[in-house]
Length: 107
Image 1 (cartoon, rainbow, N blue to C red):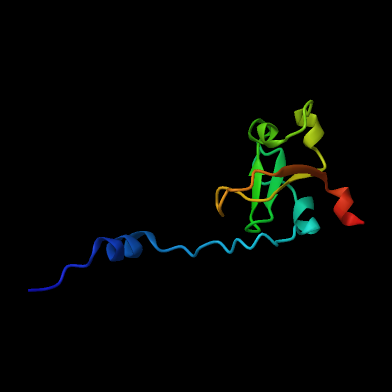
Image 2: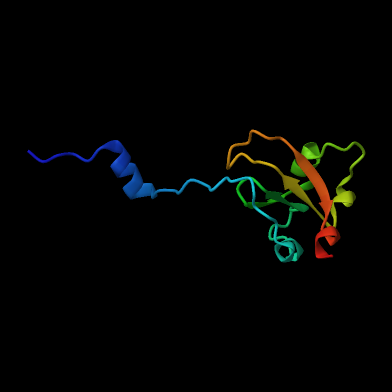
């Protein structure tokens, strides 16, 4: 009688495996990366997570609700990025998000 592989082994073989994100909370944004052109046509701004170091492109529709300031409009996003303390990919437990001008990082 041959032994059947367990479900997790089959799933890993078919779909691959992932490595947990290294969420130290001490990641630092790369200013050069923020100056690169956005890759998607509907992207308006980048979000950087200091928790895990991941970069995300967001549409204005997705970004505006994250910004704590009132009276922020889509045109206010140009030349800025969102700096988040955590995201859904690491732990998502700290909702702090700050809108930061990229020029402040360039010195």
